Length: 482
Image (cartoon, rainbow, N blue to C red; front, side, top):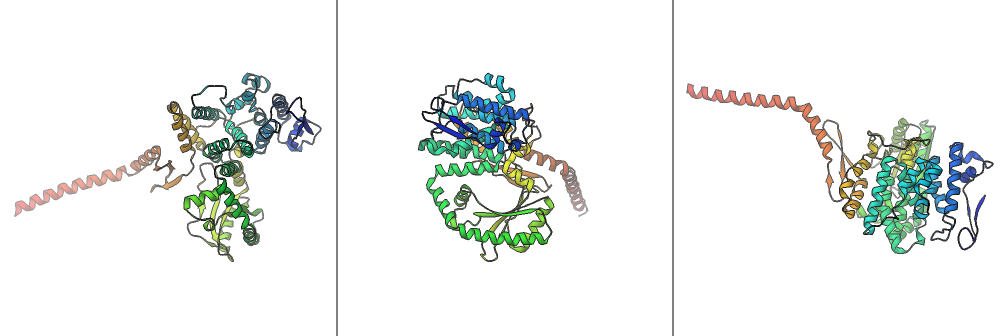
């Protein structure tokens, strides 16, 4: 089925857009319904209504690329559908620009689609209809509004991330200055947000696309270097993959996958910059990934890897026993290749862990699409960073620059964990220019230590006092006798 845009209803020339199969299934009940089997009948109707609503409102609008504007909402809704979003979330993907770009109001959205969709659309809508003294103030207020909306419903930021990802994919049609501004904002705010939410597939693409526009020369250089070494790299990975596959079968691990994967360009560039290394010195531009069915098989697979290849000291990380703040779990290790004698990175995880690494929060939706919002629970440590952002953002309303820098600090994800003598784990939060130890963690640790050691310290002090008194009395007695 083709949605056709005539010269009277869309652009100044005939244009058509091919709709994805899942949307066709929602629009036409006669179309194969396997594409939307996870959606209820009511959700499919809502999605169809949202598409037709957005289609009519954006009919006379075109993007900078010249394509009909409706192509953007369709792409955003598709990304949300791929993440496993339900009817309300996908509908919000279609409608996220209508309040900003048309005469439709939030009340109109609520009348047609309900309170839930209205909340999502309002949370994503920018403040284009308000007056601000500077672009920086406008930007800061946009983020304040977005974070407040996130506190009510975390799906808001997922819709926004999908919107930003598609905009980054089509950034080539904008002016160079605007490209750099949007790319910088994406790299500073949206890519770290995707990382905090654990949506790896969004994070990697946002970073690479931002890198492409912020430093096109470095991007092209790394891209070409990777392309030049591709044949050699694929040959080495193929040998390692074959060896590990055979060894896993011998150990009777039946349900597993072994594959090689390339590292992302921005990650390679970041490592070269931080470690002051040349491209030839970066060994993990590709990695081996082993996916198994359960935690026990993860550690069994690890023993196979270390038995088949020589492990590199200091390269093993157990993110299963100590997950990352965004709930990422995996075993990471580095080994030396047999023939090439070049280091190889190996990641081992379960299918569930892999799903979480790719989809993040979307793998554990904490809401029901049929009515309630995605409220953050008080004990959900995953969103501590967001609650902290909300706690102090009111204090910074007078300084937009300070607020934007504060957001970057909060989203900067580079934690180090310290184990105390009492087996407590204290996270060290890295600030922009220094390492800081969370005061609350210090208090908890000190309180614990005091509670455990107060009796010991008190008894030692009493013994010292008694010893000192007896020693003094003994010296006086000896002096009298003399």
